[in-house]
Image (cartoon, rainbow, N blue to C red; front, side, top):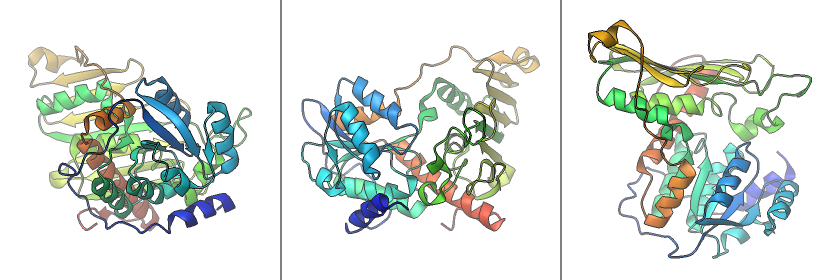
Length: 374
């Protein structure tokens, strides 16, 4: 751990932790600015998606970036200079700034709990990169702090809001596949592969540091197939994980997790950092049909006995496709403006943390882990 990151954590741990537990947010007081821009601070440029959220904040007419803090001060100062906003060396000083309404959190995953609890206690709305936290306990602490403070939390789970996911949810709700028996979701990229252009891989070295990430391909990229499988099937009874270390990093770069459900329904979650041509692929199979989504056409294909004999004889593209829903960032801004809560997003984010913690434990101990005892 670098000295700057150690100082940041030591500063934060002086703030008393909240009691943990997932509490309903429907009766919490409303905290939002009335009129004018929503003024944001960016907490760290650690994650590879940080620039994306910066661009969304700059492009949104309702928001403005007004301050930056980073656990690596040199990195934060460069970004602050580029944006022409103040850089704060001391996070509590920034949190005490009443001119800041909300924060975008892209710190190392292992810092999420401390940073977000402190932000919530300071009355700041929170948008964060997945995962919410590496453990269920920490996620519950964050949610309780957010609920108690009455601030708005949103986790970036972008595939929840894509056109394909909306279509698949509709198909399942209409039971066009009958009883769902298996879901398989897979996504990989080649960020860990060493190439002439990227001798150490194109992912930052910090992505292979378990002290910052709490894991590798599964907790990062695998979050997407994991929360999609959770969306389609719900939370499983137990989890079995197998991790591979093809490039010899300290964290896994090739992973499969099996989610086990009552009566034998199975979810299969696959992720890796070692495959250059492996995009998102979704399979859902049931007693009356199947659907597929992915490359090369990025269309939802369905074959269903429920839909009638012609449909059972061939694969058909699902039409019309619904539009994409607003992005997670756009929804966060709307929740701040309207004083509403991203209930489903938060519930899925908490479940995702539980699943990742169980998967890591299963891979480490080479045995299944039950979720109903956590």
